[in-house]
Length: 127
Image 1 (cartoon, rainbow, N blue to C red):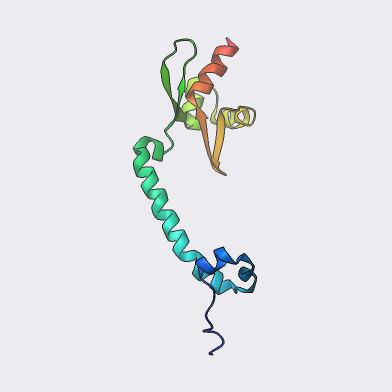
Image 2 (image 1 turned 90 degrees about the horizontal axis):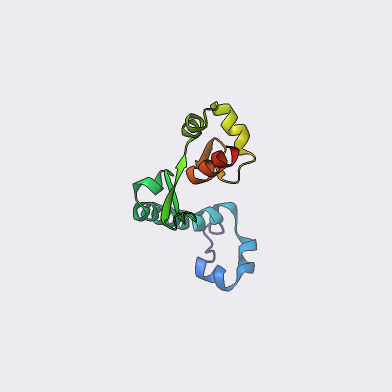
């Protein structure tokens, strides 16, 4: 029992001597990671608050410059349904086309976003 309660290195000790991590058990690793995960989640929530509600939901993206007019344009991220409506394609077609589009990004396995500026340039090139 006393062996189980043996003191293990803290984060500062591990930062100074990374080789100590080799002796950690699975439970000790979890105990060391838990506070870090909590801090990470807290910082992520704060960052989303600082970015504003539109960026937090992925509806707005980076600010890019419009070369033709020289003005700054805010790029908006579209859902596949919105992109399908603009292009008059099916939702399935958007997912197929997105594999080749550099202006489409997979946020997760089931979530796709399409840059409105990129989509508009692609549509203009088709005309």
